[in-house]
Image (cartoon, rainbow, N blue to C red):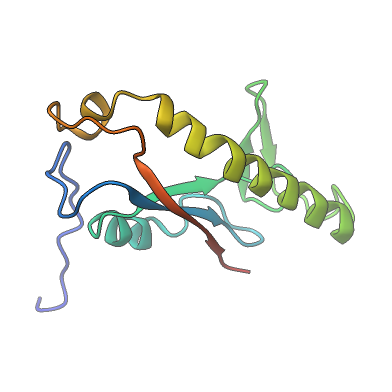
Length: 132
């Protein structure tokens, strides 16, 4: 059909712009999860945006794997709304702080398929986004 899109991803595709690249830290809505906007993520990645989707641990995700490996299913009453907001805010602040550091520790060429690149900064502007 004329509306069919090619959603395939290409590993180690060449960059279409110079480093550093913008980083979107994405927050999912209630009864959703970090995979809910994968088409959006592919589109942004095809435009040289690094996307990091946070899986919230406040009970609002459809399903979350916690750090200890256990699975937390959706539970709207696990925390109060204020506790949910505080948890989400803390997780987003942690991502804003830690993700750029993680990228700066990588050897750029090994992780973006361009072994001849030398840079100290893969990540440029950091943007928070999501849906409710």
